[in-house]
Image (cartoon, rainbow, N blue to C red; front, top):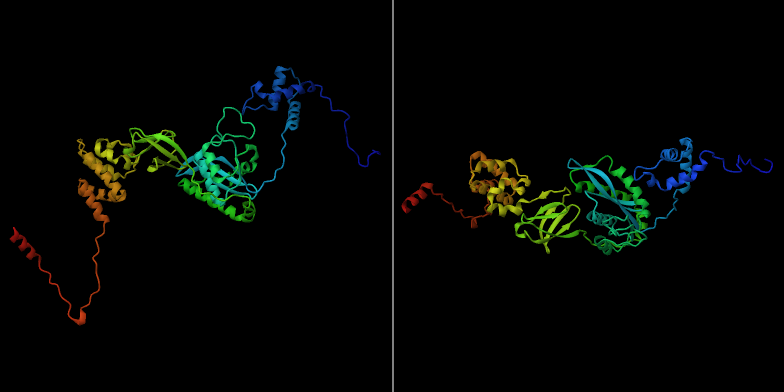
Length: 453
C-alpha cells in the first residue's frame, strides 16, 4: 500500500481456476464456431442453454448452466465485430425499401416503402408501392430527385436482384453486373454505381424511424395516389425545415435530368384480345389480336403499344390470375356475337347500374334480337356517357319503351338544351312606327293541306 499513491485494488496473479469448465472451453468455442453441425440453422439459433445440453449429453459435462452461460457471453464479447465512425459526405444519398401495412379503399394490403435519405443534411423522401420491383425502384428515384430538385452524385444500395444481375455465386468485391433498367437510370442522372450494402446504415435507421412516424398506425386512403400525396407533403415539410443544411449538401450534387422510367416487355396478344403480363391479363382492341405488342410498365399503370401507337391503358394489378377487359375493346365483337353479352367478362366488369340488367331482361327473347338491342344500348353508353343512358333507361322502363332508338331520344331530350335564337335590339329609324307581324290562325295551314290533297 505504501508503494502506490492510490490503493490499486484487488489484483490476481493468474486467472481464477475453473476445474469443471476449464477442460471444456475449447469445445464450447468449437460448438459456437459451427452451430449448423449440431442442428442449429437460421432462426433456430444456438443459445447458451443449447451449448450446455450438448456438453452434458455428448461430452459428459457435470457442471451447471450458469458457468456455461458466462463462458458463452465472454466468447461472444471477444469475437464481437467492431465498427469505425464515418463522416457523411455531402452530395451522397442512400436508398432502401421497407415493408409496411396500408389500407387502400378499405382493403388492408402489404406495401413496400421506398425511402431515400441524404445523410449529410438528414433530408428524406418516402413513397409506397404495392410491390418491390424494378419499376417501383426507378420511379422512387425519379420522384425523390424531383422533391430534392437536384441529383445526388453517389447512391448507396443493397445488392437487390433488380439492380444486380444474378451470377449464380456469392458476390465478392465491389464489381457488379448491373441490370439494364438500372444502367438506364444511372446513365440518365450520371450518379455513381452502388457499393456494398453494409455502407448504408443511415437509410436502414430511417426505415424504422419513418415507418413508426408516418406509417403507424396503419394509414388509410382511398387510393395509392392519395396516400403518396400525404407522404410527399410530409417530406416537403421536412426539407423546408432543414433548408440551411440542405443548401450546403446541394453544392456537391448534379443537375436534375428529364427522365420517365418504365420497363418495356415484348408480349403477344391471344385470340381473346388479351395480353398476359406478370400473371395478369389485359385487353386490347380486337384489331390487335394475335399480334406482337409492347408493354410499358410503371408501378401503377400498364400501357400497351403497337410500335409507337398507344393501344390500351390499364390500371396495374398484382393479383395472380386476374383478367381486366374493357367494354370499349369488345363492343364491335359483341355486335357480331350478341348472344355472348349475358356472360361476357367486359360487360360484367363494366360496373353497369341495375337499369341495364333490367332492360336486358325485358328485351330478351331467346332469338338474339333482344341481345342485339342490349348491345346497341351498351354502344350508346360509350358514345353518350353511362350516366345519361342510365337515366334514359329508367324512364324507358317506366313508359314501356323497348327500342334502342327510343332510349336514345330520351337521352338526347333530357341532356340537349333548346337552341337559343339570335336576338338584337332594333329601333325604327326616324321614329317611324315599327312593323307588326300578323300571325295567321292554324286553320289556314289546314286549308292549304286540304287543297294540296
